[in-house]
Length: 407
Ligand SMILES: Cc1ncc(COP(=O)(O)O)c(C=O)c1O
Image (cartoon, rainbow, N blue to C red; front, side):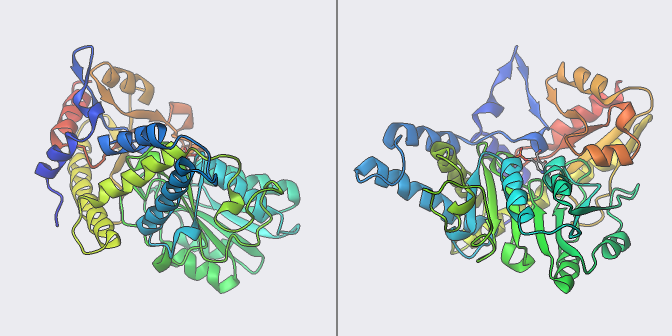
């Protein structure tokens, strides 16, 4: 079932933040890669935990049983969202970065000096820093080259994965350039040498259906606040992948998956909000099962966002004094995130001028600091990034284009 401009207009009614003005001015949110707005259903799910069952888990009294039920339901729905076997594959945490540090620490304990981990120049620091830290243990960290075109050098990727490689940490999609990486190739290469594959899907999950089983990944991380939910990190572990990892955990803690990597009390209300965000997305799809509706909705929203991305990309490239970074929109393997730089202005100057007009776009390196450095943009303040979400409208992009043209 296609997701149309009329659907987008309907969806906007569900997001209270989109219907507010600031100082009498309409706010145009084109900052989705930094975090999306939330629909009312998410706010209500969070509210409902505080009113109905704001107690800790595993108690022998009714509100505690209820919060247990909601946590289990949330895990199960997120498993469906990602195409995972069941809720035992889904761990929650404060955010993706925290979970990835926990994962890297645990995996690091299984490595010996001289073992190799491969990261990329394109990835967000959250999928680099935790692995770079393993150098303290004598692990050798290899870095796959980013080409000026905004794609990873696949020959370099193949060359860097060798007999000593124990793990490849790769982003599914770049939050800076919108590049979509070849996970199937990464899986073939890592499988050939028996290495683990850890995928950062933070920027991918809001824009494409995810199918962890089809991808065959060992671990995949994402973050609900990028797909219309609250600030909660999500770790998918393939069945059995987490079970024996030497994670940091208390002796009193449940040592089985998915709890093995979770520490302390989780944010139950926010996790109920994650559940609601997935159900909300699924409500835009058709199908007999929740999984079918999720996949249908994500595929339709993806096509809508891609067409807006293409519109913006084609128009912005015509403006003088602007350079676009990243691939064009000739294939579907492209997230709707478009970054540009300016001959005469810094991205921060442009972002501030746009912000004064109520247009929210990010400038800088978006924590993809290595990519921005490799592209030679660090000294010039990085990039100006326009992010398209399910609630973005073509007239908002036209407003941005007019504002850019006027500068
Ligand atoms: C691609 C990517 N990976 C990882 C992260 C880190 O996510 P979190 O804020 O949940 O730690 C981000 C956040 O912007 C991101 O865009």
